Structure formats: structure tokens, C-alpha cells
Amino acid sequence: MKRFSYLFLLLLPSTLLAQKQSKEDQIASAVMAATEDQRAEATVLGYDDSGQLVTLKKGTNELICLADDPDKKGFSVACYHKDLEPLMARGRELKAEGKNSGEIDNIRSEEAKSGKLKMPDSPTTLHVLSGASAYYDASKKEVVGATLRYVVYIPYATQESTGLPLQPVVPGGPWLMFPGTYRAHIMISPPN
Image (cartoon, rainbow, N blue to C red; front, side, top):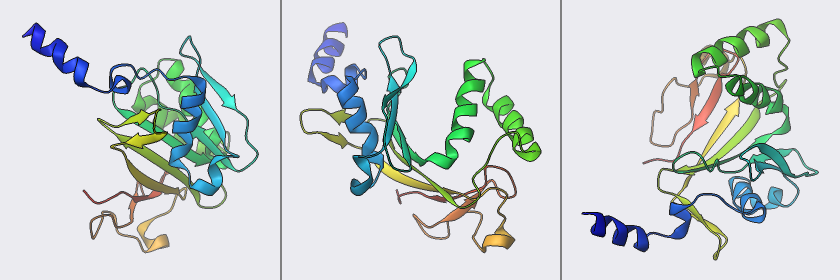
């Protein structure tokens, strides 16, 4: 069995075996979640040799892109509007403090209600390119096996204020997730 496992590993693309990427590959793969016309000027956050999240590239447009986390299975990169950075940064900070997802949600909810956590004033986007077995092929400069999902944050939006359904009506159709909360958003996922 061990011999079979070893042979199987030899057949896998090296990017599936070791997700750690160079700075250049982190930048190249992270911006794949953005539209082509936004990629060159986006800010990119990624991971240094010690695994710390750092700014890999300071951009000049409205997008912040997040590289794939080498410590997580699968592949996931995201690009979001800079007005979402306070929300995203606070989540990362609380996670680093050891808070679980429920605690993070409760704390950010209270801080958003009190005004301590600045939420976007208008609809704001997040694009996620991900897949459980997806990977970045550095030789081809492309992400293989991933799908793109769009999220439009509209804090405190409801079904009544938007007219959106609370679940997809058709495959890939938009719907409102977490209605009435600070993290209410329109979800648009690719059909399976």
C-alpha cells in the first residue's frame, strides 16, 4: 500500500503536494479572482517565509487580493473592495487571538452596531476563486480546477429591502445570505 501511495504522489502536480508559493506566484494567483482589467493595480496580501500575512504588493486601485493560505487544504484566493478591509482585518485579528468563528461573528456584529467597526456605505464586492482540488499552475500562469463566486455586501439588507430570495431560485441565481445582519450579502455562486 505504501508503494502505491508513493507512486500516486509522484503522479500529482507538484503544486498539489506543496502549496507554498513564491512571492511572484502568490501575487499572480491571488489576482486571478479579479477581473483582468483590475489585476495589475490591485494590492496583494500573502504569506512570508514564517507564514505571516504581509503586504506583497501595494496597489493603486480599489481592490485588495488575498493569496492562497499554504496551511489550508485546497485552493482559495479572494479579491475584495478596499472598503471591506476593516471587516476582513478585524476577522483576521480576532482569529489570531484564538477566537472561533462564532465569537468572531458576535464581536464584529457588536462592533458594527456600535460604529466601532466601519462597514461599507454602499454595496461592496468580494470575488472568491476556489476549489477543493484546485491549484495554481505556475508554468502556465493559471489556476486549474477552481470556480469563481461573487459576493456583494449590503450590510443590514433584508429580503424586503432588496426583493431578493433567501435561497437560489435557479442554479447560479443571486440570493440574500444573512439578511438583516452586518454581514448581509448577495451570493452569486456558479451552478454545480
